[in-house]
Length: 394
Ligand code: PMP
Image (tube, rainbow, N blue to C red):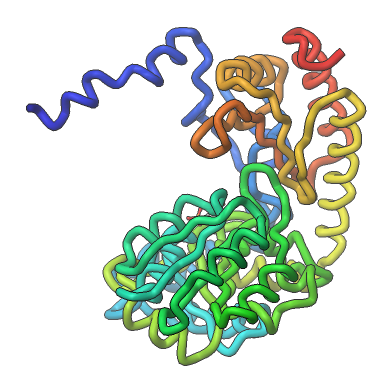
């Protein structure tokens, strides 16, 4: 049997492509701004995680350029060996202070943070508890560990409580959740989780990817939103959304971070985040602290779109954040609408199973502080037109 046979037989994407509905790996030839260039046309971007609009900010770009001038384009090695620059350490100190934790550790992607952290903490005999809708990299990190993986129903604290009650007290337990669920934009029930974790002596790790810069008075994310920063043992964050770069971090107790630093294989055996990326994050954090009005604008845009999409008759699920799904049901309808919306000048991401439950395909929309009312109204007009064409709204 040829191991490539499955590749030759794989036709899923071909069918969608032949129907002209393929909407992945689309080419953009400009910055991640509220309006992007696609095939020489301007398209309103409702598919970027650039929540605060910092990826094209002049100060952030200048910081990145200056870092290239000083340190060059790459670190040519792992943080563990030759790849740790003074700005990595400076960023870790800044992030620890920002997240109000003893220490922080930066990795080259958010994916690698979860992969390395979860896998090195969950050893043989330990149990890791995951929300069914946790991000893929949390699930993969749990799979890579040598412990047992237990999944509980989405955001169902009673189900987690029941499962933790069955645990042998001699086994270590880690609960890992998304603070904001990435596809539907709902916020985790953190107060409930904290209570259940304390009751059973389980440690709690929250993925703050979509919370940083977005939630909480100072933009520190989900734990700040609930006033529970000191009750979350480990806070993970990525640089690829509000922080306008690429990379990620884990923050927590110094002794725990020290363990991860010497055990996480995705850190030790992978090259360090490049200088430009690190310098961009340092500047982005500074701007987040200095300009809370960006977050206020993001929430104003979010409230407007949630209200107007619902007024048009769309189902926007349980979104409580700038990630707003438009639930359409069937996969093919999601592909068709994404394509039609692009023709009408709007970029959205079609999301199908397994990223969402089967039959709950959706168009994931997300907003930026830098969208103007005019951009949003243009998008709504396209949604109204396409929604009516397919009979999804009256
Ligand atoms: N966690 C969540 C919840 C995410 O949405 C993502 C990115 N989509 C990641 C982790 C991975 O982060 P990165 O893109 O920095 O690898």
